[in-house]
Image (tube, rainbow, N blue to C red; front, side, top):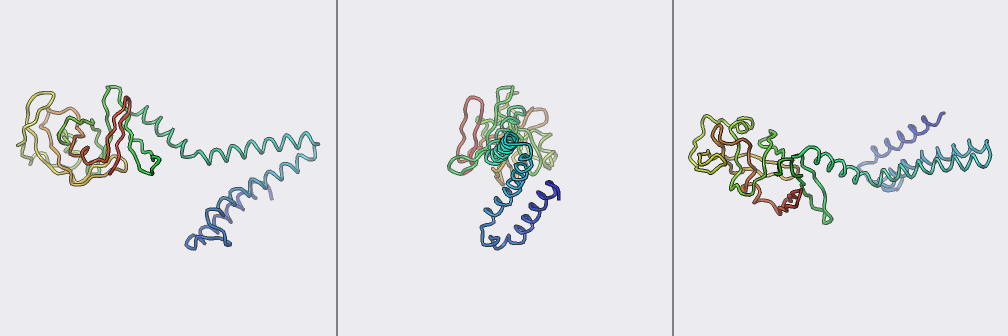
Length: 235
């Protein structure tokens, strides 16, 4: 039996035992989490032993060299396991910086979840929200009293814009205009979800980009704006 077959055999047997004993929470009287860690370490220990024994044929210096190589491999694997969540958060932050609007979800020290938005090249905070299940790129605007959808975005989320009554007077960058009141069944940014949200639909050509206004933002537990990032926390 070669080394690779040995590793797969140990991992396969260990995984099968964990699956079988999932409901009981224990395998051979050991907590499943601890048993899983043992299954993870056994092949490493076995390969290390085989490597040392094989290296013994070449003298003491060869044994030391083999031992050092395996220790480096083990430390690398353990480090990757211990810092896997930090690496994941770093990757998400990096993507958020490269792709403005991408929401990064982090867990704070008190166990709460925060959504972090990075400032875009335009100097504004933007986000890709899920509105009625459809993706809508929105500008975060604390000065807007309501969530406001452009006509094209309203159509994209399933609103029949031809049957709307534009009865609400609003001020936009293009001046005074009228908007139609609607109710959005759901708006979600990462884990933050709000249902039955009051909103407005702007007339055609009156709004270049949909706005994430206070009818959503005012429901948050906190809204912290820093130099280059905006932190949103649920209640």
